[in-house]
Length: 116
Length: 114
Image 1 (cartoon, rainbow over the protein chains, first blue to last red):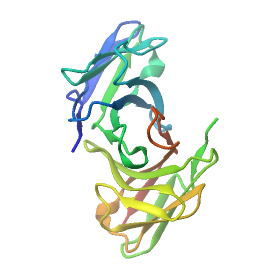
Image 2 (image 1 turned 90 degrees about the vertical axis):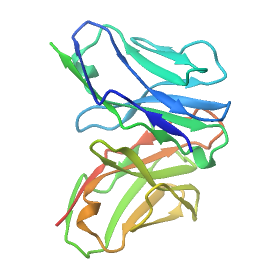
Image 3 (image 1 turned 120 degrees about the vertical axis):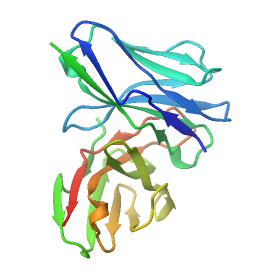
């Protein structure tokens, strides 16, 4: 079974600085997808960024980028120029190409605090 | 924009009551999911559905059942609520598997069983 591990239950960053959230996963599959979701306090969870395993290039979405290391099964999220609105719980998620119904496995989450 | 709505944001029920949590999505998604979210445990999948009347157990189905009579609606049922089912319940939907489609989440229902 696939597992997703987020080793940092809590992280903090100073406004305007950069922070990296870690995620590792365990799988024997070769085709899969990885996601980072953001859950702000009392608000709906939304997608931050996604990565297809067959793509070597790291995904980027504005201030958010990933460092995808397929051999090491690592998928970290880098947030540049952190803003107060980035404060949230972040979840890493894995989904294989072959799973039923797009079922995903989530990590336990990392709570990010942004200090003004 | 995809909208996933849940019938209640907060719910308080008594032990032994039958509880219905409703979820509706408006984007014709094939897949729908029910999770519970507890501190330190992340999101745990209770049940999911990939088509009308089709359902599969997730990681923690005990004490729960589901119903999907229409494509847009997915209900979670607690047949006899217990205090250990006090939790945040999240519904999600997505397009079919095989692509990098993300899940869209509802706002959650915080259920307290007393």
